[in-house]
Image (cartoon, rainbow over all chains, first blue to last red):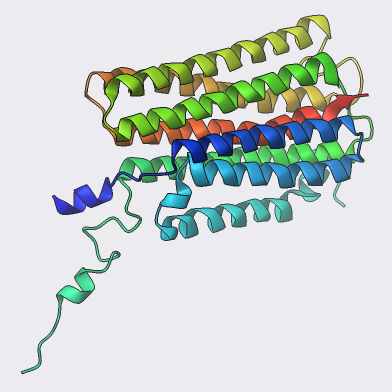
Length: 107
Length: 210
């Protein structure tokens, strides 16, 4: 059936060279993270920098290794904003109320 | 006479009988699983980050050498296994069954090596340094729960991934599975790698001993 064939369309993805370049980039960012750990930054500054670098690495993996860059953009629009929204909701509802509950403090 | 074009609406991607995202149901199912699992790990890592920043007596048990050097090696091994998985998916798309299975076996070796290194580190921390899930020699006891909880959940994902790879490799080699199955398997494996890209810096690099 034509519809079925369309649904199981094989996505070409990136070339071997591009994937290798992405892999080298991921290793390089990991090296940068280890270097930053060696530099003894403030924990809050270090956390912010590491989260940003991790998000960059995650985007590289999702775009190229997981082929999201080569899928229909509607799939990206469906998956990513909903995920980001849920993570933002965690930041709103987890803290500090959840920890207050753990310590059995009303306020 | 007015001609009503009923087939216009039916041609829409959202009218049924078509895949609006142009992917198969297996791949869509795996993406939905990945999103839900991302939220599980996000909840754990956000909770960890909050605890880490608000606890001034957070233990720093990982010296640059050997602990960070060891965990960096683990990271590179996992990244390398992601690259071999990419090669497996590319070989499957070319219908090269022999090379696909070969690259999948290489990915499994990477996963097993990562698990072996991780267990070595765990046993060293538990039996030589006295870290447990309920306490540690110094600092807040929350560290043990967070460290073993998050890395343990990730290691479970890696072990399940190795079994999953084995099943798909055998099935694809025998012609029972398609290239799409290999690609869906690849999505899971890359996700495991992606989670480690957050676990390694947040858990290890935030607790470096100077």
